[in-house]
Image (spheres, one colour):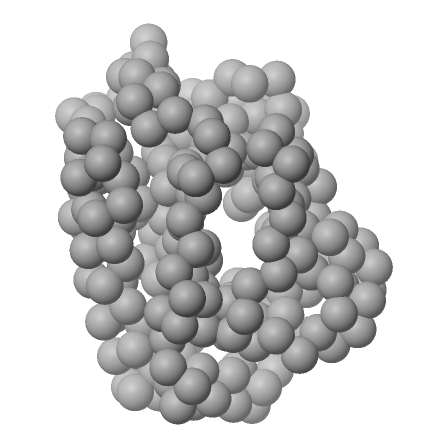
Length: 216
């Protein structure tokens, strides 16, 4: 099965706490202010597609961040564990105005696998091999990202970038007050893969949760 090749790469990286990489001050305050002000004006909750962003300065920040994130992936994963990632981002860097209800947590899940540990083949979600999340604000209560298998919880500061392998199970605690804004992208391993996607349950993958979709 093609996913075995992906698991080989995950195994090379390993599953310990230091594989979750936090890069402080990835975005400067002026860029953070610019993006968050735009999100507030846009007002729509949930993920914001790049096609819906009409501000060229915001788009330029996202595109530049994509290249910078890839460089950090090379430094923190490729150079250390000899694991290559495709330099073309799998899911383009985009913005999310999280639409979780107050005090409603994001359930524990893995980005590329279903709750039973099988690969989430639906629409190629099994290729979500590394998540890169930049936190755009910190003026909210709750909303910490946590990784139960390594007993790690993080409340990043505004501008921090958090990267972790897609096989790492994680969740987000409920936001008690305020709004939580992030800049998010996914990268995939550099693996030759011409699979025709199968329809397998993916209700507990990141995308399934974010869009309130359920598996069959």
